[in-house]
Image (cartoon, rainbow, N blue to C red; front, top):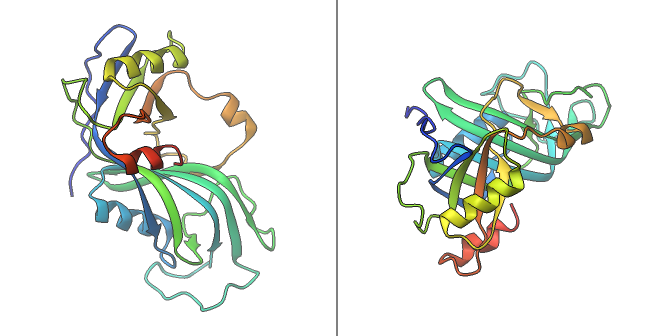
Length: 229
């Protein structure tokens, strides 16, 4: 299994570092019936991604206690183990230790018995789910900041405002516009229930995933998807 490529250590200035990576936006179907982490692992393998960020909307789920990962699931979703993802963002990273997954979202269980702050690792999608996402095949830095790559990594320092850092990064990349998301690399917390407090206290330091939304970029499909993921 391919190991994770570490983020470059050398910053290009005292306030931020930015570099294009081998990645793109995409649409796909996340398999149902398997444990969620297995479905995510299979999707990463299909695309040969080492890092992936996907979003899911309105997907039925089931969490059947005592069901082995390889056992078949029942044909019907019963109230005692059925639930629904309202919205969820999952980040996954491949390393020498396997695939690690984390994220945040909103979900409910029909009978209300599993309303915990963490999404159970044994959860399976009740049916295949449509997802949009951003995948990265290589984190290797590119010295050519005018590269036509449509995905980039921005490393922030706590002393610079995100808005200013993103504007600076877009200028150095040669992009007229772009979008930024936190680049989660700490998977210890698993998938957590999102709250308004979480959104209000997003870390000002760390890394961001940048997507090119410039009107003049060559890949029209990527431009379309970058506005939706």
